[in-house]
Image (cartoon, rainbow over all chains, first blue to last red):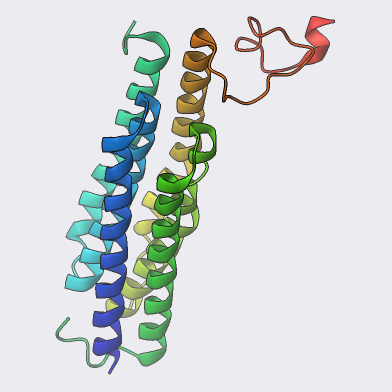
Length: 93
Length: 133
């Protein structure tokens, strides 16, 4: 009973997160200016991190936690570097 | 999802509720990212996913692994703290870069600058009118 509840809720939330990644990818592709694309990339990173966490719940293993932590780190570093690039024209001065 | 038949029902319902609420809020945030019309409205939308969405899914994950391993599993708190701390920093950097780009190109659809601060010095000072007078 509880396995069935967990299976269907994890499946449904995974499909919702995939739809969220699709919306963010639309903004990355269609965004009129560069800052819109960077914002879409940040939302895409967050949705991917949450999707990997739900994979961890589905399989019941804690290995996915480390992948999610690495993706969160990459999201911070890449968005900060891209924002710095849009502001100054170069990342490291 | 095998081997979960002795998982308690209350925990399954609670984990499912937290997961569904978190995923739905993340989806709502990215729908706002698609549908809002200007960048300064769009920058607000994905924060719904990084605060409530990530909070719901991470809380569900903490509850699931704590009940599954019958001990307190708090390692997801690391991601929660990290996302909560870094998202305002990155989005404020991005919004400042966007304001700088729009001001140098004199775009029309940007937020009003303060009336008492000329646009040339509005970027450098953090909008403190007392320092100018």
